[in-house]
Image (cartoon, rainbow, N blue to C red; front, side):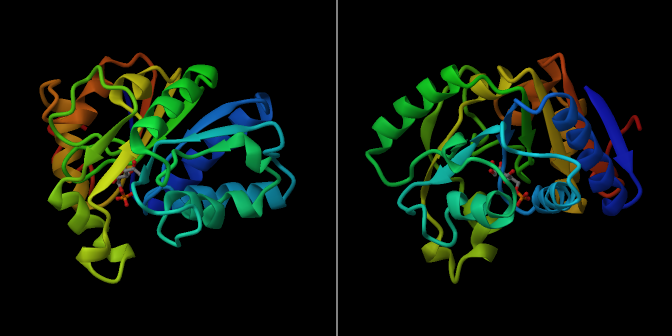
Length: 242
Ligand code: F6R
C-alpha cells in the first residue's frame, strides 16, 4: 500500500485528480471502477473541469460502479445511477451505454448474476473506493467473506444512519443494496482509496495497521499489490506510523 497524507482536502483532490488525468491521457480506452457517496464528488468535479479544458476525454472510457440501492429506480434522485449522472456522466463526453451501475429494480438475484458477468467482461483497470466509517468497501459490510462476488446485502444500521443525510428520513433509506463483492474489487489491476475526516480515522487505522480480517473489509487491501491510499491529516490522525 502506498499511503499519501495531505494537509488539506484541496491538495488531496488536486493530486488524485492529476493522477486520473495523467492516466486518461496515456490510456484513453480504460475501464474505471467508480464509487458514489460524498468522497468522490470533488474528484469528479475536477475531472469535469479537466474535460471542459479539453485535457481529457471520456469517449472511450467504460465505467463500472460498485453498488446500488435495492428498490430505487435509475431515476430516483438518491439512486446511485442518478448520482453518477448528476456528478459526472451528464457533464462529460462519455457514452452512456458504456457506463454500468447494478440494477436496483430487477429481480435482485438476476441483477447480481448479470453484474458478475459484466465484471468478467469488463475487467477494471483502476477501482476507486471510499471507506465506510465501519471499514466497509462498496457495500461489503463487516463480516463479508473476502471471496464474495456481486451479491445482495442487508445494510448495517450504522450505514443506513450514515447515509440518512441524503434522504428525508431514516425510513426512506433502503434496507438492502447490491454490491460488487470483495473478490471482484480485489481483481482490479489498481485500487485508489480516498478517505477524509476524523470520522474515518478509526477505519483508516484498522485498514492500514490492523489485522487482515473480514470484520474490517478494507483490511484486505493490504494484500493487493497496487493500492494507493489518499487521506487527509484528520483521517490519518490515529495511525501509529506516518
Ligand atoms: C459508495 C460506496 C461506499 C462509500 C462509503 C463512504 O459507492 O461503495 O462504500 O464509498 O460508504 O461513503 P462517503 O464517501 O459518503 O463517506
